Length: 89
Image (cartoon, rainbow, N blue to C red; front, top):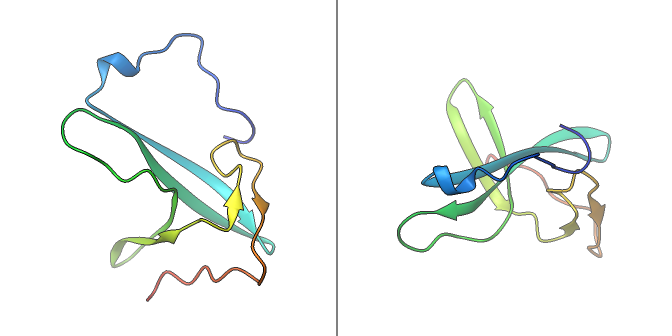
């Protein structure tokens, strides 16, 4: 789950929806990211968002627009101030 995502065969044509889930590190903490790569009908959001799963369920955070390379597994922070990864708001 770390590094580049590779598959020997492209099977996305078999799925109606493809959601990519990845781990990434921010300031020494492991976070989770999600993105919808494919949706059969209608439009979908193209951002990558951090998410958490806890006793109250799934919480989706703001777009990770201050990072590059999150889905490749090699994120780099490109913002100007320290990132806020609080998903409780």
